[in-house]
Length: 330
Ligand code: DAH
Image 1 (cartoon, rainbow, N blue to C red):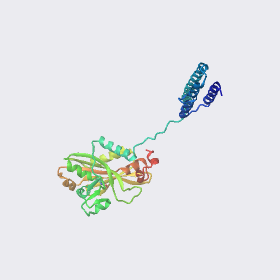
Image 2 (cartoon, rainbow, N blue to C red):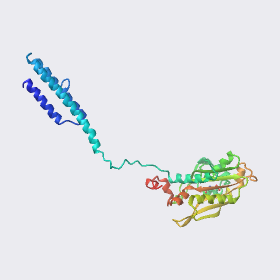
Image 3 (tube, rainbow, N blue to C red):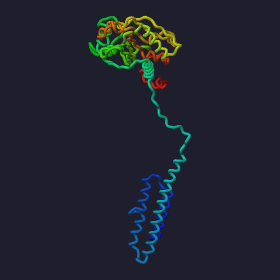
């Protein structure tokens, strides 16, 4: 094959390669190296000039330079054209009617929502919020609240013991004692928190639940103020139409004691939501308050029970299963 024919052959095969131009960048680079690289086909033809008769060199030199220029320009044009097509087709392919990306959004747990509502109602009537220990000694959870060891009242609250003297608190009432030990009266607090009971689990009882304790201590605290405050709370929480009942009860740390029930429309029965009473003088003595001077009322409400009534939830266990189908309804 003469050099002229070789030049034509390279030109033709290059044109064929351009027609089937690859999309993969590595293949594009391989193509460039094959024709235009330092050891590529064009360089190869240049090296063949050495074999030519000196009289032929100027002509072939010119032809080869033309070839090199032509291939280089054609190659660069092609690369640009492919890039343009890429961006254009991406724009043409965009479908603006497609739905956007879905990002699931979290929400507050229904118990947290209930707690927040309870807190804001009591804050609006002058209560402060305090917290206390979930693991406590027997003294604060029981004895200081007028529940001595082996007293039958302990049967009301099946207890998880850490050791002989340490318990997971069975109620938030332990914080009444901590508050009064650490502060002089008067005081007015609510205490939200978790409590634990080793109870048979059912639709309305779980081994873990939440309470909000309340404690009001001052010089003049009539029983009607307890009743009025709690009725106000229930009306704020449930509205004016809810059927409620206030009945006598017993707790070792209050005297007299009462409980509020709320009518459960779903189950057609009363559901107790809180215990309360006037702080027993024995409790004041235990914390060093003079019961001749100071009086007070206390209460403790079940947050799960309130949430169940408010949101018509049939089973307390729903709160603790983390099932998104349940949680996303709130
Ligand atoms: N601690 C009681 C319970 O867990 C509830 C309770 C009743 C709290 C009367 C009080 C109260 O502060 O005065 O069942």
